[in-house]
Image 1 (tube, one colour):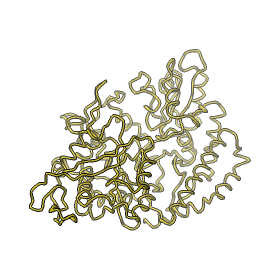
Image 2 (cartoon, rainbow, N blue to C red):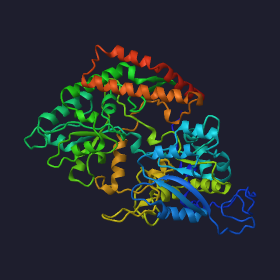
Image 3 (spheres, rainbow, N blue to C red):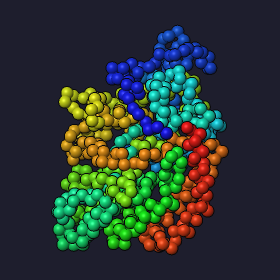
Image 4 (cartoon, helix red, strand yellow):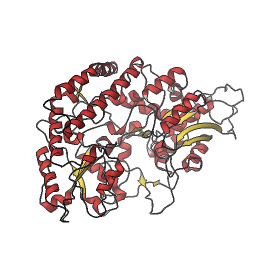
Length: 559
């Protein structure tokens, strides 16, 4: 599959057109509503052309972020006025969001629409096929064609976006959160304590062996100069956001995608976890573990425990930490934040890979319309979504209203991306400031291609927390291009509906087996010399071949 290519001209309206897009209230065609009330399908417009005083009431199931109240939210009020809507939110907290969504669907008493936060919960591809075929979810194709010119243009210009959102039967059952986050696209970064490197007179390591020697020095040579052997050379955790230690350490030997453990070459998908490079990578990680260079807690602890190591109250004790960004394990406004800087991918015998995951874009949908929505409600909802596909709409919706959370750039302001015209200048929050409640946060993430995100203004002092995104951007440039030439596009593939349940079970069992055995090999509970063949046999028994066959079929069908 081709990598996404971007053009602000092709997929984002220029700022001069944004206000026009915002007011895309002109109907493409007029019809009598099915209710026969004298109101056409254009939300809130009477058949005689006069605006209706009665907004369309729309019920929405939504995940409400902390520090946000949807009912009084400034973007909520803006959207209601702009599209003549009155929202009736079922606003739930993030805890248990998936279960509550499933309960609402199973009960039959579900709302007109679901607008979710993709990194908390969203409809899976299997959900979309299931509820779409049942008629619970309304296909969006005709609505997009008639009332959503921005969505239509984006899908026409972006093959990956269209593939992500289009089911095998050609229906678009929902819209995913297309957020091309550059620093998120290489999540498994290593952040090394460069203050300790300077203290010990060490160079930045470039190979696995050099990195091992640096970690040995961190352990044995008292880099924090407190006279104690309290240093933790390397740590991480077991959660998301690139915090697992294995991918970075194994990427010099074999590509580790930290998700499904797949490699892809010459159009053929294969398992990384049975390759000789996987075995070599595990042997290297085991050598670090045996020397006491990896915190054992990295394989069991959560993010909170990881951060306690990074923010140890008495002395700096952490030598290196894995994560998408260092704020996972150290406070940005602390003195030690600047101690941790990115370690570029290590050069192994044949490879110098970095895990790439398409910028955080994941399959599924965060926005769907159900069959409970009236025709007027459907049109109003798709117009709202279409507004979120403009630069202004996306910024107002996800980040907060203009004049409150962002403003136009000033002369001399510099965009995040090199050579990119600045378009959005964030208005920083002040310490102790009351939450502004002016945007929908993650719930508002609809369409953020890389060119859009690169257009945000950022200062150049990277250790200023206000310019954190530039610090991450610059760090990610060290990883860019270290992914394999071919990546298996599992994030955008739709498998045959008849195999959805089968592949879901196979994927879960195989991933769990690979991860459990990797840990056992690293910690010595299993021997790479004696138990490797039985480990491979176990994957065969879990039908690894069938799993790869289903994926290959889905890929071939999409090309």
